[in-house]
Structure formats: C-alpha cells, structure tokens
Length: 112
Length: 115
Image: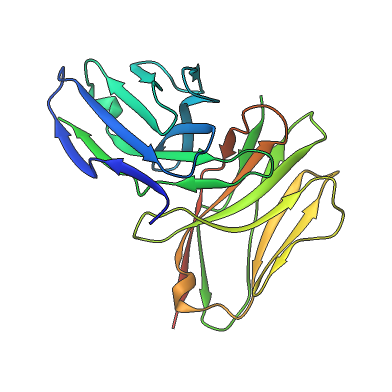
C-alpha cells in the first residue's frame, strides 16, 4: 500500500542513548517533515526537507538531527536522548502544490 | 510567526446533535490554507476538511462544514448529526500556499460523543 511508513512504532530509551527514527514514503513526494506531538501543544515541526539532499530547521529543532540522502527516506536522529524528548513523533510527506499531506502512523518514544 | 489557537481543550455532544469546534489564527499573509484534522485513538492523522483563504465560500464535506471568517481570522468546524465514530482529537492547522508548506497546528480539542 502506498503511504508513509515509520519505524519503529514504539521505543523506550535511557537518558543519554542515541537512536534513529526512519521514515519512508513511496509516493515520490518532494517534501517531507518531522513533527512531535505533546499533550496540550498540538503538533510542532522539528525539521523538514524540500527535496533530496536538503534539510531545514523547524520550530523545535534542538537535540535532533536529520538527513535526506534518498528522496524516499527522511531520518530523524537523537544523539543523546533526554526525558524532554518523550513524545509521539510523526513523519509526513507532501506532494506540494495543493497540499497533499500524508502522515505516518507515529512513533511513541519514551526516554527514562 | 503564525499561530493557531484552539481555546476548547474538550467538548462533548449528544449523538445526532450538532457541535462546533473553534479555531483562531494569526497571520499577516494573504495566501494560505486552513485545515481540520481528526486523530482517533489509533493515532492516525485524517484530513477532515480544508479551506483555501482566497475562496469566500465555506468548505463542506458531508456532515462537516466550516465557518471561515477571514477578517476575524476565525475558522470553526461544525459537525452535524454527530456519530460515535466522530469521537477523536481534532486539530486546526494553517499553512502557506508558497514555500515548504509547513503546517502550524493548534493545541487540539478532544471531542466526546455521548450515546
């Protein structure tokens, strides 16, 4: 099925550990995004990409890095996890022009 | 910076009744989109309805309609004939037409349907 796939769906990390969240889309979309969702704060943009090899900071980029080496993949990295990064992370892709957003199913990350 | 505000953290409605969710936004831009997304317990983000700012006519999708007041920067969602399956978190979102089309979301409103 066409769409956005996020891996993993759940993860528990210890403070200071690192990990990478993978987002893959098979719709040939140019734009991709990482959002985090926290109670009472909606979804906030962490980083985004407007094409292969490009990345840019969003509203809450501190503590995260991203890479888009291939058009279909957008990776979100946490180098040294902190409890404040406990959240649900959503990846999305967008065909552009008329706002064709497709969201992944989310990753619930807990940092203890 | 653009902001989106949903002032109702929680709302409830009787099944088959009508409910309106409120959303206000702040922007100095003229060309943008507004959206309502539904997030059921499955966590999936589902587009409910969208409105282009240049269109004066309010968008409608079956039982869902919006009241778009551009001058007041208000974008409310009306759900008619509420059904148990409408129970979810609802997010209002704003995005510019140009550029990277980043979305700015409101805080969300949790809607409960009472049978």
